[in-house]
Length: 510
Image 1 (cartoon, rainbow, N blue to C red):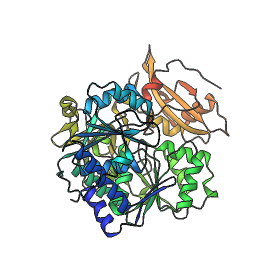
Image 2: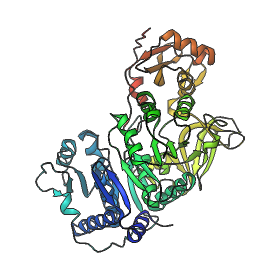
Image 3: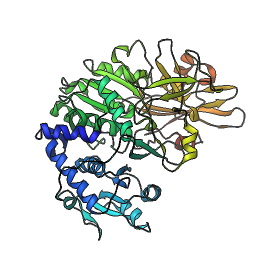
Image 4: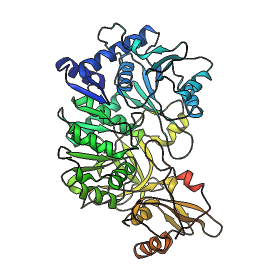
């Protein structure tokens, strides 16, 4: 199986002037990308970085992040992409935990500099951008101008390639170890079902320091495609304008991304005729939202997907032609992956019986970095315990119910938030919603719904409850409803349920 670096090398040698990445006014072709990656690899080796050393990247999406990634791999190093929006209190423990030998960050990134200053043994530092660099820091331009001959990476397929610290929604982050072979296997599977080739291009809004954004990057570089980086979700109309201007064939997002576009941008006013497909992952998207997306983009193939960082991004995909027939499903296993659903006792569940989803395949993580107990808790005999609850139908399509840890225990009943959220999302006024369980002296927990209403519409508590009464069992109807301006999310777009649960005092608005 060809490594990701060798695929970029092949394209760079055969078509060096082929366009690779655009980021604002910056553009780079495959030949220049490969040359800069080799130069950065030479810089790392000349600076004492050896095989297996960790290179932490505290960078927003950009050409520098891509060069640093592929250059580090060419040097035999392990990359550790860290959330560029994180504060020093998170960055410092991550840097300590992975024992980073080199850190690449933006000049003037105060939190990165504070985290680095707290380390007893400061690593090699490289700063991008034009801001004033801390003394002892190497300028990015110096690093990528190092004289270099094409590198011959010493990495083996089984070697560690990347450590991704999961943002998670609760608890302490863990460093997911992904191998070169796992990355390549995942890329091959995604290329296969999306039918990606050298003519494809995409607007990328997903951070490279999360598995979904990383998979978008690596799949397109592997086929010789074109990646257009659009860094700002604050102005969603700019994303759509970029899609139209660059005539891209693809777009990837999480549910909140698509809700943002649907609620704030008149998509019909833009020429998106070049758009061939969109992909959705990073959390469940309500069928009502999928239907809205279909109506707004009738010519586009919509791929609903499911995965985890522990699976190098992807586990399932729903063929677009099954979108209506299998509404609510996250699909079938990607090529090379097996899925089963198990009961509490470990036995295989029957079709339509809810249990925990287990996965097996070449794309699974190697484990959690320096955490054998956590690894043993989720990896067993080649299977990954995903922690997600769901069922398989008689055709083998997976339907998710939610995270095991998210399950609401109200009285004698067990309720998955997704069941309630999908019903609430059917209301036209809903922009976003999230359901959690909050403590109750009588029932143990009761259901509370947080709702974001579209700016041009209005909604009352009674309307929501009436809608739920018509469609849900009595024990699934939210007891508390709170209208909020926004839902707290991780940088990858997942809702922070723990933060919502902490808001235990209902403030109903009618």
